Structure formats: structure tokens, C-alpha cells
Image: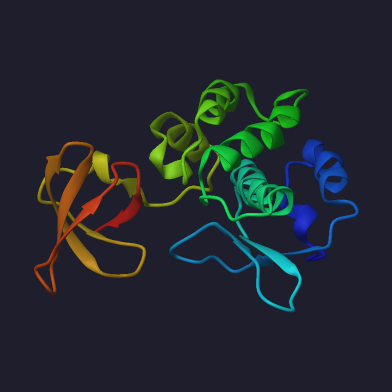
Length: 197
């Protein structure tokens, strides 16, 4: 367990998280920010089960990422056969993980309603849930990022991997965006954060 793990959590959540991990042989590392994911659950032969979580300044996003990954561990340790990564077993485990944290003063009021709704049918990523994404953004440190849906059509932006895209038309639930360098088109969810140019 990273010694600084607890320092990223909302203070009222520390005791509950400590109780959750007590007695489990899971290595938890806080790592530098990765562009493609907030957290990761990993099982490797002859190595302890591990969870990595990005160091982030939003304590509520950090806590939810931890609970998301811990739900993966609960499914792994509860079933003999492998289950879908975000199937019904994981959804149920995640809902059970979050429930005790909805009590007391761990989450601010503005997060409770979208979070309760999210746990009823949790998605593989918070970015797929518009209401929760927007509520969580209120607690991120100030930055120049915007969600795809906030950009004007034709606007240029840097994706998380550094590539430059232009925003094109909306196709059903996602936006078609063209990579300036290769002219290839990609679909972006509306609530993915990018850096406008």
C-alpha cells in the first residue's frame, strides 16, 4: 500500500477505506497521472493482486476510482470463473462498495444525487455518465479543459494523447472528430475532457 494513499481521500472516508482493505493482500499504488485511465486492477501470475490509482487533486474522484477498482477485486475474489469486467456482478459489487460512503458527510450534497443514480446501473467509466461527470468537475482544480460537447463545431483541440483534432458533427451519442495529422475520424463521447486550442 502506498503510504500516501490515504492522503488523497476525503478525510471523512479514511476510516471506512481502512476497514475495507484491512486483512486483504492487495497492493495499492498511487501513480502519476496516466492519459488513458484513472485506475487499474491487475492480477498477474506469482504476484500479489494490485490496484493502481492516479494521483489526483479531486478527493471525490480519487475515492470513486478506488471503489471502482476495489469492486473489481471483490468480483475476482468472490467467483471461481472469470466474469465480464463491468458485468452485472461488478455493477452489484460497486453499488455495495459505494453504499456505506453515501452516509454521513463524505460526499457533498451536489454529488449525492448523481452518484446514487449512477450506482443503480454503473458504467465502465464516469465519463459515460453526464450528470456525475459534470458534478465531479466542480471539485477538480481550475484548468483550461472543456468537455467535447462544450466546443463549437470546427473547433481544434488537443486530446489527452497530444494529438490535434477538429470537432465535427454529432453522430447519435458521440461526436465525430478528425485527426488533423492523419485525417482519420474518431468518435468521442461528449463528456471527455480536452484542451481547446
